[in-house]
Image 1 (cartoon, rainbow, N blue to C red):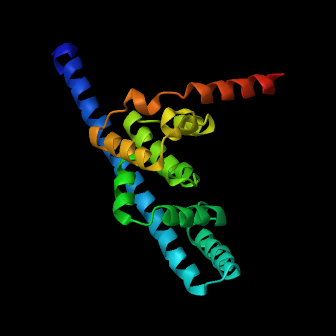
Image 2 (cartoon, rainbow, N blue to C red):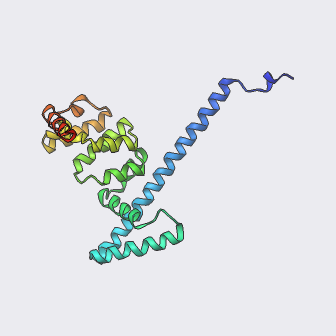
Image 3 (cartoon, rainbow, N blue to C red):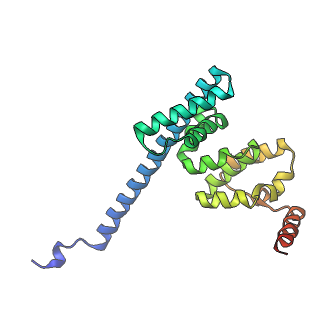
Length: 199
């Protein structure tokens, strides 16, 4: 029997390879969603415990003690810093339905960056654009650092108009040029600042 008869053809190999890659991708998304949901639940539970104590010092003690116990039991990854991220995540996104939606589209690393944004409208802007444009964590960090929101004409509009534009973005699932259109005055200001820093 010749080797050609027992060797799978390229098309069969490519089709099976595609099936494997797709299944791996779906599994990674599902695992990320479960881990992110776990972090939210941990943050929510800590928030409940800290609020019952009603003292900042009590909250700090809980986090220190809990992180030591969790690290002893589960190893690295459950330090004080991680628990504070979980708490901040639960405080920033108190609604479980919103968290479930976000988990399916953005990774924990994306969401951790987004929880650091204090302004809810600005955060919502980055959430919507990051989902639609499928930004990596690195791209999201770069856009936040470059102050993309502040440089758009959208940021100069009244709050109600921004909310309306973001809702339209959510419904149409398309980024319109109006949303990302740069404010020429604002861009000029940042350009001048950048030039001054280089001197």
